[in-house]
Image: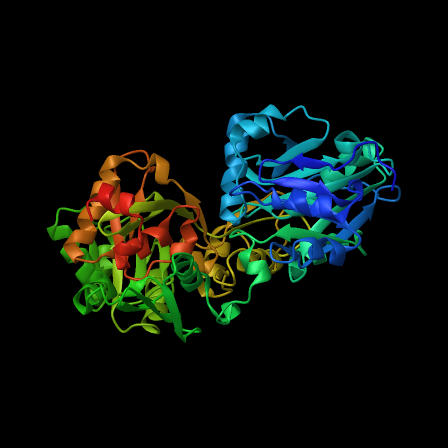
Length: 559
């Protein structure tokens, strides 16, 4: 392949793209890969003879288990429909760059210095597109394109797609497809002959998307350098990682990174043992022996939790047990709306929110009793659902949780929209988040004026669950950096009252930037993986094994 430039290594911020066809000697390509910078992920692409390159540095390089796909831009037909609820545009500010990094971090990708993005905003070689939510103005997706002609004078006039990433909490459909289509149209307009990409071999969801858009497999290979970032691609896990849920996996990954021994006790249940320096601790995800049975008992019964934190001067809503019908009915009639929930339970099961009359409250109580004989009726407090992670009595992360919602397209029924959204949430959370098609969902849909089999108009936004729990399809949006000091103090105060070292404190707030709040409950086994990229797993392992921290950090924390 004739090219005008030789030995091309294009800096992309997260690492370099090494175009294999520009290297005449395998030894030169191997040398270039070995010069990878710290914390970067270089990619050597278009390798026709990977065995020769690997032979030049077999201890340092590996054959990446990815497939290469190509879209023929000569025959590609632009999208017929414009995106709904969002639009695609160029990256246009440093804030855009910071949002792109947020999405990268949430997807476990290498982040890029914001000024790198900004300094190349007018580059011909690298193009950045972002997807912006029309309602919120937030960035919900991103994609990077490389023009091979501008990068190294490619006489085949090719282009390539990199870093396609959608916010895992985005609820709008079709963001990834729209980003790929926009990039394809962009390079088609520039006269590029094709658009190539590299995708990990077992990413069935992404491969299905690309093949649907017309991409076909290309017989070429990718080589990377053995480093910590790539470790999972060239080493076999000592246990079945697929059997572990994300909440156990994030802790185990951090422990292994520090050289802490890991023994899987029961993968399906999330039980494992961590051992370091003669100390051994059994965990069930973020629950350990450091959390006493007393603390667990307090968290287990929401009535007890409320009494304990109220005594510690934490604000709580009014509440009544549903065992006395006359008293409960009077409570319901005295409030504009109420919440019904099992006294004991988790993951939002059996919870009904925003009930306005006695009839629907009775129905919700009977539903909750199927899960727990003791049911609570609570004053409904208007606001946003805030989860605060407290580890070792320090706030580590905070996020607003939003309830599951769908957006009409004018063709699909509410049931189909929910099922489609549920599949997206499951894919984004390793199967942990799905929208149940139960009586509570039907009630919420009916409140919006529809049945499950109705077809809502295009762009109709509909909340289909009132609770914002992740396990019932809710989404999580990080607010750690803007949390009001009063909310931080109240969360720590609640954790100290319960005497629990690791907990998820749930508040209802007007906004995370203001001091007003109502305590709802405390979770003794919070999902740390839900708060990436905040260092929840790091602080959890710090608590368990402080000696695994660098000496300078221990000294700074006075441990």
